[in-house]
Image (cartoon, rainbow, N blue to C red; front, side):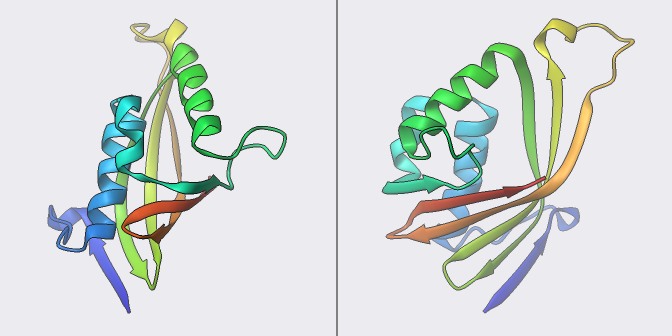
Length: 133
């Protein structure tokens, strides 16, 4: 079953636990950097297929990546559209980034990146992640 939900309507149907999990992951882990909550969202067998193949692609690798990113870049991910297909949750996203060194400098505009994140779900948690930006 494919389900489309648009942010323009102001509401996502979060009645599906998979959607709640993905939205919570993006808000809590990505946007708020609350890394202590990561196990609430990620399956023990999680693999992040978007991390470089030379790095750890599991939960610990994602934490290393997020902690290093937070030292240099402010970023916020907004979900523009969200669809489900079987065990997948597909998000059309917009990421707004600013180098921390540039924050507060009105002459430098944030970089806006549009793309997609695909999450594969298992047992109510995220077991796989792909990013296309």
